[in-house]
Image: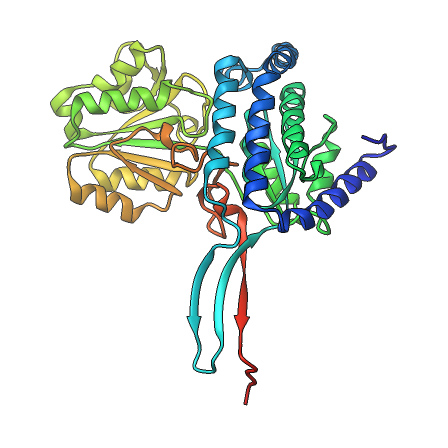
Length: 421
């Protein structure tokens, strides 16, 4: 890459090259995109030693920066995780190409045939924090949908993201697609983020993936349209009819499987009738698993818990911490969730179909679950191969953002010498 004397000049060059790459991607066949992604997976696995060595440098940087254990877990790569990234690349490669799909078709009395056809968005800017796997996930999904992408990863994952990006570039080159289709901003300088937010001539949409501070910055200052991925303040409500063994198993999984992901449980709400019948078994199970339970009301009397403050509800802990509260019925649970959630993912554990339907109807979260762990709030688990993020807004994309959500559409109108009277 050429040397640039200023960040604006660097970003202008990246943006221009991304825009130029969209012309080749618009006509790229599904087979070539498939080949690029399979090739990227093969190169990434072959180069895994270099990726792990780069990750060691990032882990050292993260420790020096004082990252929490949960954030360090997000950052860490080993062979198993690299294998998972490779599997994700292959899964995206095998999906049906979303570009060119006929979304709707109809004939008008005028004689016109009208089709609504899926098309690429163009150039996507992805700004993310410490998870290096996003480099592969975002690059793969954007390419699958025929988009060029500009990736700006966090300073913590700088070297890991660079090594993963190198494998993606090799896959593009082998498939005869422009390497500029997937570009990585080669600097930790935060001025690059500010620049991306105003690149209205070359970036069509920005996807921020990170904490509240990052997403808030992007939403406040972006002149480019944004797919918002807000914090994951995820709730699970244990209803009166919940099976006790199921409730314990789901809540433990939702909180402790991986605490640093956006689908991790942050608040558990327990119906008073469930507590009357089974006691504090859910809170005790969390406590015994090493979770710092910030408990409200009578639950704070459970030995080993910490008394909750108002600030504990509505907090994304991303750690072995969760808030807990007793509620009197499903409507009280819904009211609490409405007051504190981030419209990401909320779950109910219940054997009552009517109660589950009421919960689903009354809440406006991007993802609602019944009798399942919120850790399933993931594009891969939804069959999308991977995701760029969980969009919590309501415009265009919502929930897991996969390749299909990274397309727009245009109308193809066909006549037979048809004129308008």
